[in-house]
Image: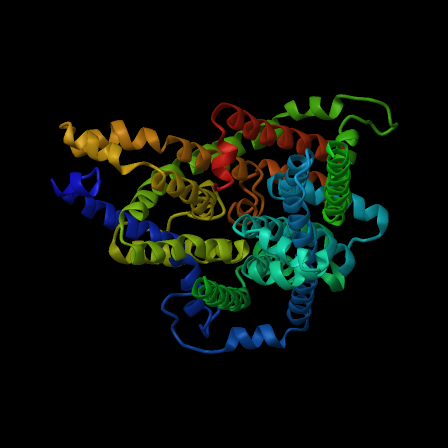
Length: 271
Length: 293
């Protein structure tokens, strides 16, 4: 009877099974990635859990290698530049599309999210082919241009969603009181959709930092990204240095995620 | 009087149109960049796939795809995609269901667990599986300690390992649309079924489950389409023994510099992907469900 009242269509005994199964599935989702962190502190060449002796050996190997350091620098630079370019472009596009209801809107929207839908491998060889003719392969400019195309849709989608929950009349009020469109946008609209802009920018940063397939084709030499070097290292042998780098990446991601949650709470507080 | 109002209205409409055009220009930098970096090269590859070395029209690149080397990679891709999509259904449905049943606090915990893989690097997650599944890895060690197996199993650098890794990576794409569909089901239907005497099992299968089918379908399409073009995880966990469609494309370019073959393979992948999305959108309006509305 209690089941009927709560609208839960399964019985109590079955629900225990459901909880157990759900717990196992959650472990399957999270545990493999997390468990690499303690393993990365091993002192031996073999990654075991629990590690036999604790040491910073593989972190020292990472920091001591010029190749890994350079690749990290390239990746961080590309990710920051991608974020700085993709965010304004995405915000502009989302605002333009939201404010003007044109018959072309649907088409533009599809074109802007196309990089998320098209098979990445096809996009990658396409960019490689184009860059080969322009001399942009293995350059930072080329890498950032490609990553902006992949990251911008995330900014666009998040900001567009933010704008849909925002009352555009507020901006009209500001303009009727004499503010120009730009001033009205910057002082009235932007502060209110800042959370979507912020999470869009964060997604853009992470998209670029984590991107592998395009980087495999178009980044190389002194502009090889961290993920590209990791990928190459993985194909040869299981190098514990990669475990150290992976742990650092997971830690970075979790920090950014926590940062996003903090900003999210602040938004919830003001509403 | 009415003339003046009419002229005013016309002027207003003109001003509004001009403003709309101005606003529209705001989209142009983003659109132009994507057109140049993404669409232009794909169009270029499209023409390449129909051109031979002398620049004449040919269907040869497509005809070559019937060669066993390519058909085998199509077969592997389809087998893996179907298998991974199927397992994702079996694991994703209970998890999404659990998520729709528990209290708010637990739901937040599950949400973080489901979204965690979204935020961590694909390569890191793939690497983690490589470490866990290797010959002397954790899974084999544990299974041996427990006494389930005597000799280590071959869990990685083959079909099994690729399927395990891909399933974990694709699972969130199944859970999220399913969860969205489940929360939009009106629980009164289930209560009505119960009050009319349906057993919990019956009301689940005959009332609740059919109502969540659009979400399930959205998840299936999303996972399947992503599997078809997947590169990174099969390349690492397959260890060169699992040759996927995307890897045939990569090899055609990187090893053989055969742009005709690579383009033709890419175009077929694109057409299949867009075809599935279009068909599902047509039949069930899945696009809206994926859009997370």
